[in-house]
Length: 463
Image 1 (cartoon, rainbow, N blue to C red):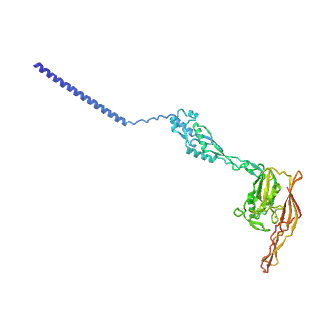
Image 2 (cartoon, rainbow, N blue to C red):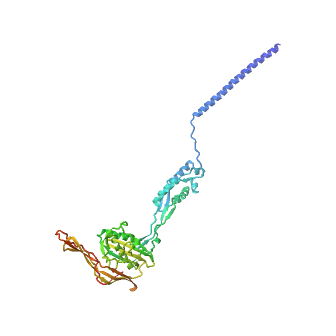
């Protein structure tokens, strides 16, 4: 019985020891776990307080740090731009060329290789490029030069087309050149035709004077001189093509205040009075004289009602808008041009062309009839009785024939007995005083400059 009881007592003691060991191990294990969490938490906290080192960016393909600097240097370079007016230089950046990021990410290889393949990762900023090209266009465009007649030098200058920068046509070339980093680029230009071409002038030779004529005028009459110059300016440079009939009235147009003409001396009803566009008839007469000696046909002309002081009797041509006209026709197989100059008291006309086919052209005049002029008195109660002055000189009436003869190698080859010219007598007006007032004014005679009767029934003038 004793053995049995002793064994149970031993077993109870061993159980206590095992339980103590187990409890100790649990304590140790708990401590280890606690220590783990403490250490781990401390480690995280420490890590959170250590500053992170800056991340190093891995350069994208084709845009590493060195490549980007090199590309920026390329864009800062100047490129030679060839324009219509020569060469100029601008940087690629100024031309609106910039980095293309999308292209840069897809690119590989160094810039030299990419440039050789025309594959630099750049693009065109259209807004900036168009602005730069428009500014360049304003500086480099060349205007066309019209063909023109140098009437004084008797030369014809050909037209020359202009050149204009084609802004939108140049954009693709600009983009292609930028991708290869070229140092020179010829921009697109467009030809701008001249408004007046040599063909359009209708004449190819003005080197010879076929005929000319000059008339004199007083430089003191400013309004009349103004009218002379205005009308002459309408005729200067006129080109008459072969077979064409030219009208003075159609070309010069209406002579009125609206078209700039002034009041000056004109012949009305056989009397010299002030009228609108006075002096125009001297322009038509001088043109008539040059056309006469140039051998141009004169299908329509009319002489004045009274002779003119600036041209021989029978050698004048009046014009009145719109019905009384001077018409010329070019009978040659080449065009002719008219040069008209009014200056220093002379109106001068030249008919220019390849050359007159005659050695000499002659104007001849033969008086057929002469009619005496009448006289009229004009009484004036403001002038002392018995005094008188001439307001207008009288001039006889004439009927005459006008000839034009053509000579070649000293022989007459052609004759025109075409015109019969008639001038009515010009009334002489005498102003007589009727006043008995001793204080009345005297009749002061103004200087008269009327035409003089011909000294002979025949007259000749030649060129």
